[in-house]
Image (cartoon, rainbow, N blue to C red; front, side):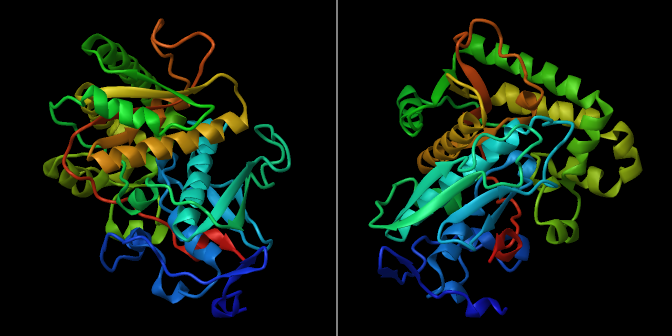
Length: 373
């Protein structure tokens, strides 16, 4: 069926919802891999509002930018499920960071719904708690679209949100700004901050140890370099992963990796030193670290942590603060140094904040690569 023949308006409770895209895009240019950052296509005006909402969901952060979600619109709700081949079996074997990513995606849908005057009501795990291997084809989240939604002030920053892997400036983040970021965290999730020089040093040391251990494991190293995109043509084909220009490399280092070092040499460990040095620059330049925690474990807690991650990222964007989730260290369950977290709290995602040059947007899959109608 031709896409233009799909439902043109969504009726919720008998109310016809005919809307126009409310968020201003960032005008990223003609590249298909970056068009999502401009917001929904003008061709969607007057179409099913859910398509426009999902267009903004595409902008959510995800582990290694693999975008591990697919969406079904075959029912009145938006059903979100895991796309099973978009995972890291060696780096994230229990899918912990993958479910954090799915939680961020669902929260992006909820935020976007409010911009259209409707409410996105989230139900996580509508079919029950899946194990790490069973039930993963079932919906992870259901988002019901109801009339009369409220706008969330964080939503307008979806198109400007970035993951910034550059070294940060030597400029402190003020306590009042950290307080503002904390206020973005929803109930059920806590954020623990490490801003003192001593705490930052301890976290940085733990990050470097975890990164080195990961890079020394052949399977995890291959996954790490496997998500890197060397050329624009490669990025246009995959529309995911991490282009070299987003790694935070200097112009010279990027040129060397792209044009001098062979892919065969990289696969055999040729980028270990470069990746470790990048991790060192990122960790040691952080002006504060944050860890999102919950008091209970399970998939619902991971999804909630993902929602919190997106919200803190958007709050940082609003304040002009650079933000980077540090997925890799916690994929292997990096041990947070003793005494920094309460014993009864479960860490889900580590991130760093500071100030830096603007980071470019990441590639994104197109709407109809994600949606099933």
